[in-house]
Length: 497
Image (cartoon, rainbow, N blue to C red; front, top):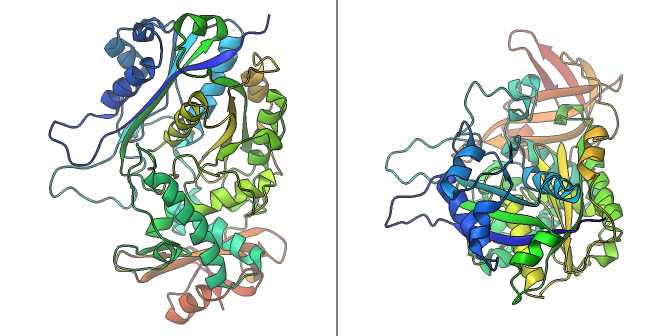
């Protein structure tokens, strides 16, 4: 007998920067979000009876056993507790797992919850260039805390704000537009995201930005890494939490609030790129695993892209949305919304947990009758790990009992990693690049990715020459030839123009 999976409760919380009371840590925000989700049920006490708790791993604070600690604070005694790995794909990946376990009759109700508290409210705190993994201990055993290779780190590519611009530069080259026209196009898309965030009750930033404000460097919008300014980056220093309560159709009947439409989970998918790191990628304008997870979700839901009323495409940076649109074959004039929250740059980018806010927002819209069916995507690290999910007011056509098992067995997609030459010399062809800036808005270094004459990947830095920085930031040099020289003293390959 097919068991339907219902999103029976949902809630989200944003802790504002100015507070009269002591701020809550991520665990406190998880408790709040969980209890808020339970208010959607006819009996909020059902929260204490959930038999599964799945926690999105917090990156802003460390908890040795977050699931057990949360269960104790909620007064729950679940038989199954699970904590995610590191990656923005985590919330949807957990929902996929929870739904499958419910469909197999292993669990009846599951709380999926996560939160981050990044805001520093005391004076004289030390600003970090990237606070993303602030709560991950140095002895963390998982390999998922790393998104780039040591070789890439040596060339100054380590954090998302340095890595994602590489995709955008490649997209710019593929567009055949001059830089001004291309940036205006990207800025216009991001301006629309800011408008959505301005109307969302839980967004961090409610200021509407114009395209010119977004793409033009200035005192409040410094360049971070070409071609991105600050307003084109995910905004991580937020305090936000979200939770959903998933139930079997039978269990949900007992707690259904008749004032709202039912919200069904129809299908999801998970996949990883065989080309895990940026230095291994053969195409910086595509993502085979993203394409794969959307297809999985649609196939498992028995639906097509035309059945979707709306999307929330993971939006840490503009390139992530552009590549998702390309992989999903969405036309540029498609009227359906690409974000329901305003995205990580405006709504807020709470570590691993942004995607759960998108799910909660979609569930609310479906329950209120504003949307019928929607698809969300989520990604981890540099276009490496992807998840997708479909939610609807219509019951599912297919069973979900095997989706996590199928994905565990078959999760890799795409071509094999590109071979790397870590001491490249001779002639090379540029595939993408970025310029990383200091806080005073001056260029610090440029990192270039390309192919050697043998077709192997090279990564290089340019000389700290203002004329080279000017050249790279004014016209597309993708596809151009450079001379590669390996500096044995600095252990760097240099790209010479």
